[in-house]
Each structure stands twice: as structure tokens, then as C-alpha cells.
Image 1: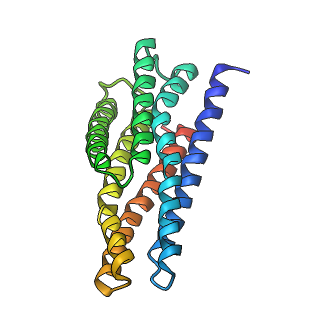
Image 2: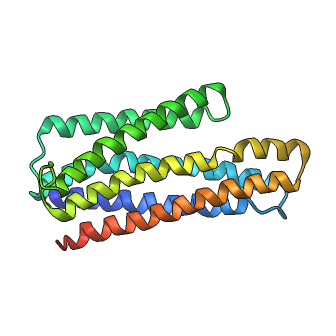
Amino acid sequence: MSEYKIWVFIHILLFVYWLGADLGVFLLARVARTASLSFAERAFSLKMALVIDTTPRICFALMFPVGLALCDAGGYVDIPAVWQALAWLIAATWIVLLVQLGKSAGTARAERLNRLHLAFQALAMLGIGGAGVASLLGSGPFPPAWLALKVTLFATIFALAIGIDHAFRPVAPAFARLAVEGSKPEIETDISAGINSAIRYVLALYATLLIIAFLGVTKSF
């Protein structure tokens, strides 16, 4: 079996677990906004959504270094070993940050880690997006047009992920109020508004992933 086929297999696995686990998060989040359920049921749904959410985030972190290795093995782009090693180092650091975020949920430390994560995603979006746009204009590191567009769209996922985190931010304090005060119209409005806003970003993310997958499979231009 060739190295290229192995990387294709890993790439597909990451895509499947990313999209599949994220769909579970999506459905659980929708349950959490259902006012007719008990607080315990809604809190459990939200807790499980946050736990499962680690899986697609780790797949997201691994996708770029795996994609670089795939491009190099397939002969689409010659990626120097030092750049591949740097991509894996960044991915490993990102995963450590994600694990620490999960462990510190609900603590003061989580807020500091969230700011760090936000800054990292913004820098990654600018760096990867810049490489993609430069390649589309003919002067970047990814000459094939389909690959340049794929990299550019991949960068937009960082923006969507930031949007999801921002939209979801009011939900946690609203649930804290729900636990103490019970269901009230203003609390339910905050919960529904936050989750609905996050869902719109999630749907945009799904569409972007499907386009990226289509470009990778067809290599149509």
C-alpha cells in the first residue's frame, strides 16, 4: 500500500469523525434549548454536547498537517519536511490547548484559555487564508487552483469556529440562571438566541466542509 493511500484513508477518517461528531453536538444543542424538558435533561444534553465537541475540534486540528502530508505524498505540492514538522507541532500544541479547555470548563482559568484559543484561531485563519489567497492569485505555495481554493475555504472554518464560540457565549450564564430561577421568558430567549445563532454558523461550516470535500475528490480545475 502506498504512502499516499494511507494519508487518503486518514484524511477520510478525520472528515467522517469531524462531521459525524459535530452532528451529535448539533442535535444535543437543539435539545438543550427545549423549554418543555426538565432542567436536568437540558443540562445533561448541553454537558454531553460540550464533551463530544472535543472530537471534531481535534479532527480540525489534525486536518491541516494530514492534508499537507497528503499533498506531498500525492505529488500535488512539494512540502519541505521542516514545514510539515512545524504543522504537526502546531497541531499537537493546539490539541493540548483543547484538552486543557475541556478540563477547565466553568473555572476562571477557562476564560484565559478561551482568549488564547481565540487568538490562535485568528492567527491560523490569517496565515492559512493568506497562503490560499496568494495561491489563487498565482504566487502562493499551493499552485493547483482546486487546492488553492480548498486551502482558502479551510481558513474560513476558523472564522466560523470563532463565530460559533462567540454566539454560544451567552448560553452558559443563561443556564446558570435557569438552574437558580427556573424557566423564565427572558432566560429562554437568551438560551434560544445563543443556540440558534450558533446553529447558523454550524450549518455554514457543514456547507463549507462539503465543498472542501468535493474539491478534494474531483480536483475539477
